[in-house]
Length: 386
Image 1 (cartoon, rainbow, N blue to C red):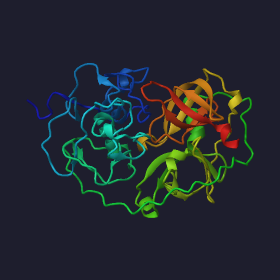
Image 2: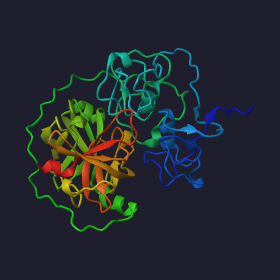
Image 3: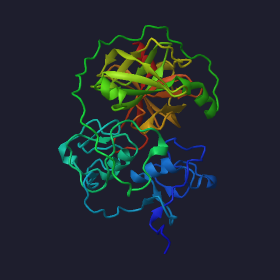
Image 4: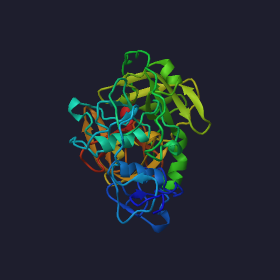
């Protein structure tokens, strides 16, 4: 029997043109996390997306796997200090793509956490932990499972642990006391809104090229020390002028120290929160640096159900992930317009852009509904001027 035994999946490489787009494009897999169109050349070529989806239970292997990479079923692990017991999948929210275990915190955790879900959402929490979008909170119990790694945003998909047998690194140090969030008063954007008019539809790759420079990685932390250490919330912000960017308030809640990362130049940009409406999740950021604004805004009244749209954000630290969908509804809630879309939205995508086929900003991606498939929402871009 070879050392790479049966029962392990070789996820392969990330050489597919669709790698890191949030869907599994490997035709060996099926399930709601798989792409709608699968082609033979993507076999073993979309490793990060497929491994993440497999760990969350969103795809499964259709036939027999080939050796290596990860177990197809949980493997027994002897108790060992410094390892996390992820528990079972008995929560009502199991396999919904969010970690509902209140022992964890981070952008991959659910917004509402309750005690009865402790150790009851194993697959979601382990997947988010391996992608670096959640971390074990201080003093949370943990035995058996996988190594506890230091807190902080993931450095990239290449750094994802590839084997459950990896040696556990040192436990992260305790955090300094957090600074309570003091929300600024809401004031809408006052700069001129460049509404899209008679725009020409483009191919998806052209849309991405037109908007990706306006999408920034947003890091927010409770203390300056945590921000410098790269520890805190991970999200997205969209530049709408040379000095203003839009995001969701839940990305920066209880994290008043923040910075943008321009991944084109690897530059960190100091930014401050100048306007907030936490009830509607609208937040406006300002910087003295120069940003690359998105070219145009789509007014809410011009949107139609069935239009093709694209989401772009930083889900689980996978920078500028680009995905396609349709506008599936335009709805009013709390006095603002919400755009319902089938374009994927995942933890870390919050504050990202939903754009139309001309590259105009349709909305700021904000949340998805539990126990549903492809029910994702964005706050209408024009709501930030209201």
